[in-house]
Amino acid sequence: MVHLLLAVIYLSFISLGLPDSLLGSAWPSMYQGFHVPLSYSGIIFFIISAGTVVSSLQSDRLTRKLGAGKVTAISVAMTALALFGFLISTEFWQLGLWAIPYGLGAGSVDAALNNYVALHFASRHMSWLHCMWGVGASVGPYIMGFALTSFQSWNLGYRIISILQLILTVIILFSLPLWKSSPSGSENDTASSSKPLSLKQILAVPGVKAVMISFFCYCAIEQTAGLWASSYLVIQKNIAPDVAATLASLFFIGITIGRALGGFLTFKLNDTQMIRLGQVLTLCGLVLIILPLNDAATLAGLVLTGLGCAPIYPSIIHSTPAHFGAERSQAIIGVEMASAYIGNCVMPPLFGWLQSKLSIALFPWFLLVILVVMVCMLELVERKTRPEAAGQMA
Image (cartoon, rainbow, N blue to C red; front, top):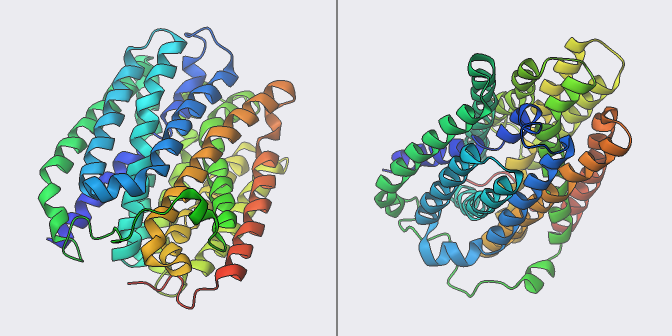
């Protein structure tokens, strides 16, 4: 039964990834129809991310009350509804309205699933499960590219993803009894018997502020790249929008492949080593994009940047119980997710504003500065916590 539950969690991670890269790949074809500037995609991302911050901060309470299974089912259903709203929208304000349930549906499920896996499964499973997120994030732009190339319709892309999310919702609903056969024997066994920690109590834990900044930076890199890579290829590299929508998915393909391979590397490397390896690869990818080389080098840089990002997120999450204690992990992962989504909320629109005032050529330099800050913060976390068995939990 535990293996069936793990399969359902894999599907849930796919559902998390499917819609994440849709807006970035579709926006070059969408924004003119809504009669808004290119930079307005940042507004939609801001609304989505604000919703995820709110729901992430409530994840500890929601998971204690409903259990991880029910939180997952409700959240995926909300995302399916929001995507349907996107495809029927005819005005920009309507996109903003549907972005609210989109964001609220993402935060709690992300924190609940990540904590559940961090507590009950080995590091390799965390890597492979986030690989499933990458599968969803990679398939999304391909579906959108197919809709744009074959039917010149971004609406069709959203329709297909909405239907897939609905199917996944049904699967998760039927799987709810499996959550009671979890490794610890209870659906709610991830929750401590103590009361939920307040935000003030969480922030007082040594290393929490630094890890929050780290998550902020990581998601700033991932989401800014996911949102703006396609526009960078169109504007800076003069690639056709429908082709760029497909090529931009190379970043997410890099993440997907990296997490698939990373699961095997965790047999030899612990979480800290996986994080540092990812940071080096990300740096190499950004350097390739920055150098005045040909388009092939730019595309290779996108793949390498994705490969570098691959182990960072799952390894930080998996090490959270080891760094901060299992009894506090759900609350801390909740604020980690909230901080991550604040990065989503602030940095993509900030880059949108910068490129509108200066140039979209700043794209790789913007990501490089964020990477440097993330490296410094993660090293600070290591110094403040130094878990004896980080990354070695079974």
